[in-house]
Image: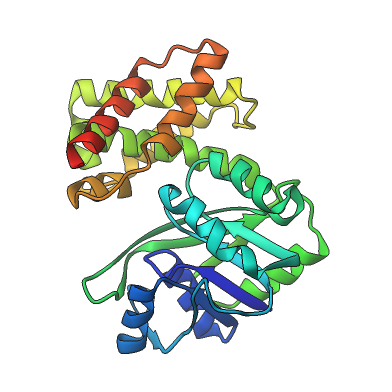
Length: 305
């Protein structure tokens, strides 16, 4: 199976690299700067699950190649339009597209660009980053990629994809309830990213503060209310489950959105929170804490300019 990974960053580089390590036919669609890094240093993964180094196959948007069987997309939401444009020439009639972005609004964008039948459901849990030389640093036991047909069916193509993903040093898991799992992760990320970016602190001190602990519960409740108003297939007691998960997280755990703010990088304010606020307005759901978080992120964006 010919696999194209859009980008070779902290997420795409990690999971794509693990597939190369297994022996799959993987190509990375990259910009010129990243291509130069990879040609000079190779793709280097430094991980608690074992290191790996290779000289990967790369492709740039202006180059020609036959359509791929599957395209894995793991860019940030603010790069989505550029990513769609760059990968379009490599999408064929039978290409499966597996987006790993957080949130949900990108699914509509992908379906509009490529058609409903080509877009799979997907998400990942991995703590990884790039260092100054472009090395992928992966630091925690969790390195999961979850995928599936959005309908929940076990189609012939998804079984073939499961086979291609099997046997790697990362956890690739086929899900029959991928839509629900995507919404659950969206709810979790909305809460964790929201409170850690708002307080500019890891989750531990926030939990230990009465106001911080109350805000965690408020964000969970408000975000879940909006999602249910949208018809999201949330589990009945998902707020309790995720609240427990947040209580069990390491004291120094930070969200990737918070880390991006600390590095003065762009953030996914509209993709995460703007989407929910628009839905809240349409459905008359009161979400004061989500508005506070969104305002904090938009002010950060203005100040960064």
